[in-house]
Image 1 (cartoon, helix red, strand yellow):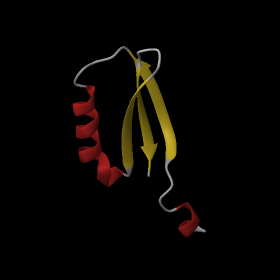
Image 2 (cartoon, helix red, strand yellow):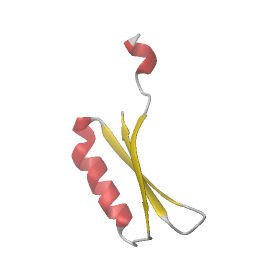
Image 3 (cartoon, helix red, strand yellow):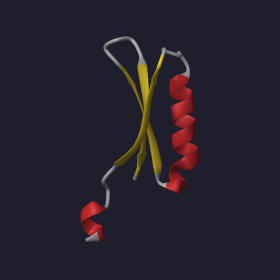
Length: 58
C-alpha cells in the first residue's frame, strides 16, 4: 500500500497575502532547506492580485 501513495502530495496549508516581489526567493529557500523534511512549498499569483503560498508534504 505504501507504493500507491509514494510520490503523492498532501496539502498541509495555504495562505494568501498581498504581492511581495521577492517572495519567490523565500519559497526557493524553504524548498532547499526543508527538502529533507519532505516538505514542498509553492507560490501562485491569483486573479485577484493576491499571492498564495502552499505547503505540501511529499
